[in-house]
Length: 447
Image (tube, rainbow, N blue to C red):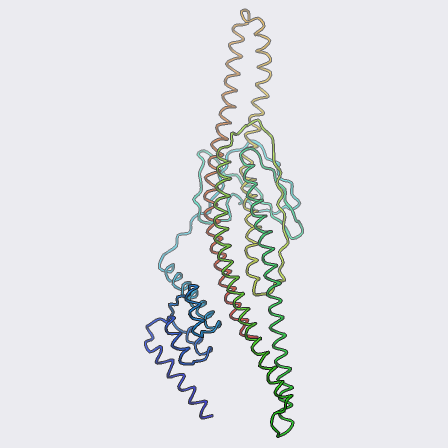
């Protein structure tokens, strides 16, 4: 007992000497001194969790720490402390600024003459304000002399699995964004399932080794306590077996920690890749929208179906935070659907106007053709009809120009949405990585 108290006292003195100045942050050098002083991992991790830190955890630095006998548990604690302190500094920085809540952007719209019926849905929910994206920061693009219409949003209920909408004219390219996020969903879902199986196998291996250790330990204790003789061959064999299981158990836990670090590293790469892909895809779609030559008389529509894909909620808890990005992809498709529906209303309204103009124009042209059979006799009538036809054609040309202007404004609006989506992706992936790092450190200590 006295020996234990002495060791504990010396450990306390060593920690105080190594961290003598509380104002100084813990560094890699401090940790190495603690390890060389033979302090336990629990003592070192406790000091890390209660101190300000400034660790260098590049690949080379981590390799050096391992070479100097710093355990994976301590390195993981250093990584968590670094991220925790970074988040704390960011929060302090934000607290010094009084945020101004920007207005949510409204999808610009024009006056319509008819109530469009282009959505085929199986579900109807009511929310009059859909003319805003899921983002909060973009600046709305205003259209002069236009009234903002309200449209009922269409959402996927628990019972309904699909929504079908029609896109027309310059809005058709926007449907590619729905296909893009569907592909991202499918790809990420497959990766998650692979990680889930890998982690389940690792956990089963660790639990089995722990059970083996307990079983051999009981047998060994019974053998030792059976008599006062020296250890026989059976006890020696059991001792070797126990040592072997303990080594394998430690390696299995360290392997799980390394798997967790590899997963977070992969998630960082996926975040950067998705950020680039979103920028490229939105830019390409915006370019096509802007360069489209709209035809007010065209009634060609492209149907696009949004499918509510299945999200596995029975995942092992280590990896469950990643499903946040699956919900993100589904929700982003609903936002894009709302954009398609809203801008499609303007196209339908212009189609209606153009159809009315054509309805008046065709009999005038037919009558003009008849009068032109005898131009000298019908000079006055021909002049009058030509003037009427010219005015109607001018109005039709104006509708085409209006659609061209709308397509450019939609392209600008997509640029605004793109920046916000990219920001949201980075924020969500950072949150996921933080949660997974915590789960690995917290749950593995329970094994």
